[in-house]
Length: 75
Image 1 (cartoon, rainbow, N blue to C red):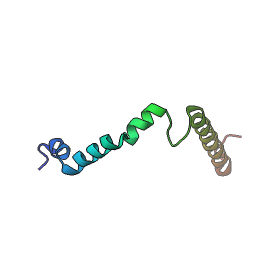
Image 2 (cartoon, one colour):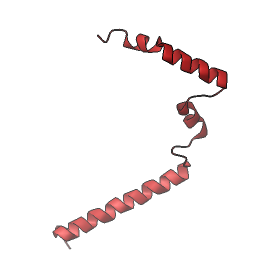
Image 3 (cartoon, rainbow, N blue to C red):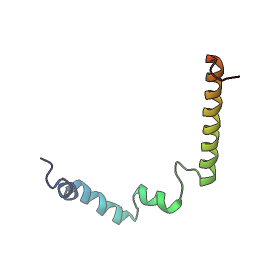
Image 4 (cartoon, one colour):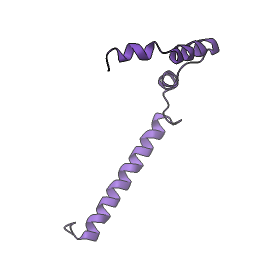
């Protein structure tokens, strides 16, 4: 059932039409645009780092609050 699945997918007429349309329009796929611009979700690497640090602090604070509320913090 799954023999030559990749070949069947590549020989699909829809895939060929999409590639021809992109070549005619001069556009590239979203994945290649993402790699070339270095942006994920429209954010620069510094912005993504800041979001990650804020998320880490939020998790740490919430974890500490849960420990205090349950009385297992050791304080």
